[in-house]
Image (cartoon, rainbow, N blue to C red; front, side, top):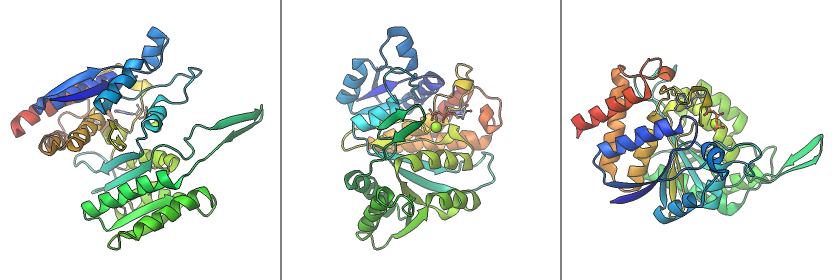
Length: 335
Ligand code: ATP
Ligand code: MG
């Protein structure tokens, strides 16, 4: 029996999280869901943005599946998502970007994974307004946090027989901060003589990614670049509705899709639940439930490949509930 914190979140969050919950249950995994919520909806109802029970639940269970959370302006927080990653030192933000056959994209056979530093950089939350016309943000880079994420990327590359790790930086301009990150990458790469360290400047990386994305396997980068490149890479494989993610620390993990709360389509039962469903599959893999994890992935691939139940973002007319039920049906037949 697993105790897992479930956070529905805002916007399309409740719709897609409930889909993911059903899918996990369809695999037969024995789960006790601890459902708690934070964000704009909760704030409207209670005046509290992150109720204590949310922290308590995450700290007790050490594992959570989370929908996107909106942080209202003026609520005292910059971003709840960023705060949780920092508070629990979930230093690895891991985002696999893989072509699912049947989705419409000019690119085929993309199979890369982004390791994004998750606790510092320009998202350290240190911003100052000096006067009406002058504002400042502080970018923090430490070797401890850089080594954490870079080690993760190389360990993943070795374990999965990848030949190359691409470190994305702007050390030619940000000589001290990105320079330190790059130095850490060079340091770590010495322990992995069989893996090539590929150093690419972030602007060039954007061009390379849209011209020839299949040249990349494992990408490791700082917080802001990782955020931006994730959405870019999502665009390469058919959009934000498809790309899952994990925030992993020493002994705690929060799984969530790359996308945000998508207020433009919220409450309409049209959001694509695939990203959070694949995040749930990553969660099962993390728990050591590899078979059930693969069952979910296989079912998703088959349903999308068949093309009968595609949501609007994938060019179809299916509702969130339709694709969810199709995936559940597929899990039953594959089991
Ligand atoms: P955030 O700041 O929280 O990252 P964002 O501004 O990046 O949010 P998203 O909420 O991620 O925005 O949405 C960007 C676009 O992608 C929107 O048009 C949204 O409708 C679309 N989108 C995001 N997630 C999905 C999904 N699961 N299914 C379909 N469309 C989605
Ligand atoms: Mg975004």
